[in-house]
Length: 168
Image (tube, rainbow, N blue to C red; front, side, top):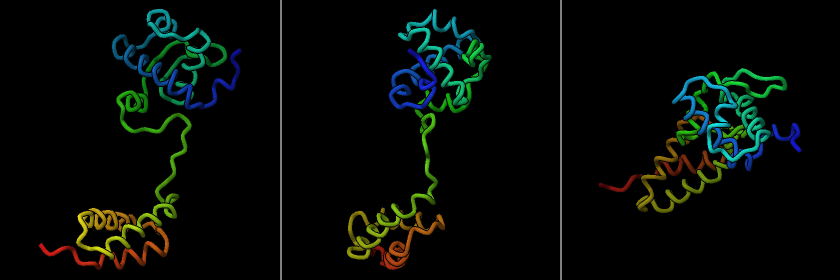
């Protein structure tokens, strides 16, 4: 039985149903322009029941990946357009999954600070290490963000940045 729970984000549904359907919708739209959802379901070799197809289409519409005209209950009747987010997803470009939480860089400060402090310590311990140029680049990029990565990073970054690069 299908319920409104079918509308909630579920990674398994995304991977197995929604993303493959989105790929098909984008390709169909690119070939045919606006179309009725039933035409796609009937003409494609998609292995979804009518109910699975309806809920997956509705999830894609609710997420803003496809522009639709809807039937009663909000289920898509026709696809009128494709959002840029859908094109990014089907092209393989990095993009968030439906409903995924994406932390801001500032939110990752404490976790990144520990790693950055370790890079700074390693650089200070061996400024001629084969990875030292990468560590310097990482520390410089982190410092350039202006984000407070914590006192350990600040102290180690100051020491690490002052470590002389290997003589040339």
